[in-house]
Length: 255
Image 1: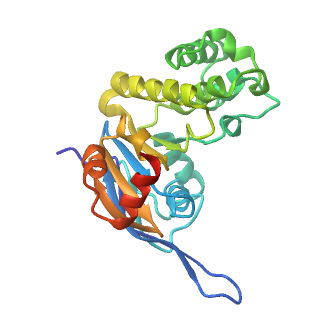
Image 2 (image 1 turned 120 degrees about the vertical axis):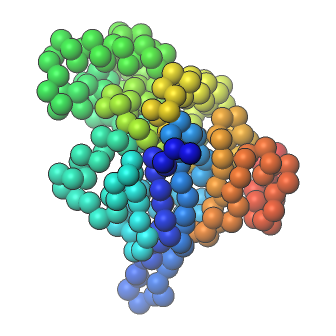
C-alpha cells in the first residue's frame, strides 16, 4: 500500500483558560489519508473539526501528537520550513471571499503564488487562465473582483488559487456549506472531476457536517464527537449501520 500523504497520530489540543478548568478540544485523534483518496471529517459545530484543521495547517500548535505531511513531520515547523511545507498543502474556506483580497482581482489572487515562485507576468497570465478553465470559469474572470462574481464562481476561483502551487493535499473546510444546494452540487461535481484528472497526485480532506453530502464522493469518513473520533468507515456502511449513538443521531437529523 502507498505511504499516507497525511498521517495524524494522537493529535490533542488542550486550551488553558484563566480561572476555569482546562478544555480538551481535540482528544488523541489518529488517522491517515492516502494518495488520491478523499477522506471526510464530519461532526456538528463544536465537535473539534476546526481545531483539527487548524493544527494540521499549523495555525494552532498541538498540545500532543504528531502531523506528518508527505513523509515530513510538520508538527513543530515554523518560519521558512513551514512556508515550504505549505506548497504541499492548500485550503479552501467556507466563505469564498476569504481566499481573496477584495482590493485585488481574482487573477491577481490566483497568480500570487506563481509570481512568488518566479514565474513571469506572461506565464502567470497563461497559467491563471488554464486554472480558471480547469475549474469551470472562463479566463475573463481573471479581471473581475471578488464582489463582482457569485458565491459559486468565487469558490471555483478559490479552488483554482489553491491548485496553483500543485498541492498534494487539498483541505476543504465546509467549502460548500455557505452555498445554495444547486451550487453545492456543482462544486462537488468539480471536486470529483479534479480528483479524476489529478489521480493519486491530489488527496482531499473534506470537512463537513452533512454525511449525505460526503456519501457522494468520500472514500472514507471519520465521525468526530467532543474531540474524539467515535466512528470511521465507508460512508454507505456508516449510514446503513451506524455503531455509535452519536452517529445514529447525526444520520437521523439529516436523512
